[in-house]
Length: 153
Image (cartoon, rainbow, N blue to C red; front, top):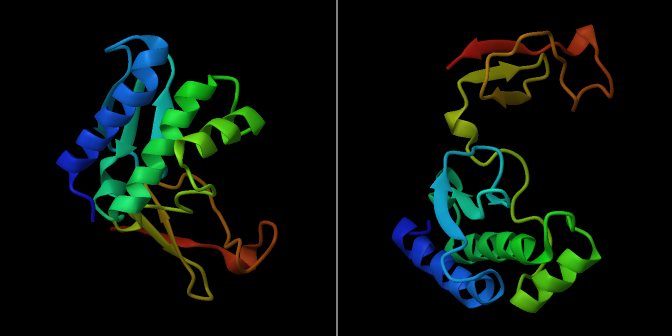
């Protein structure tokens, strides 16, 4: 579990080292957000890098550091780079080791809605499900035989 104060220090140091010389001192900032489905965000319009406080509370220091490097690489590579060759080059130069920093839900236990299919596979939603859905693990397409039953947590 990463300490949020320590994450803030790392983020500000990365911004000072890599972004301030390119964009000017104080142009980029850092903060935490309440995202539950993604690890980090590079907001080009606000010139702000954020990390999910839920992820930071669950993942170790190395994983959070990789998230920060990932987002700083986005800032340096530019809004149109995506995860293409130029972004990968910049990320490698920063020390990013590659790959996704997380897969799937990062705060599954915070989901308000829990669903179960007839086979027992559990699903989570942060918003109230508005239409029928079936289990993707049990059937490739929609299947009434594999409908998920939802309940509010």
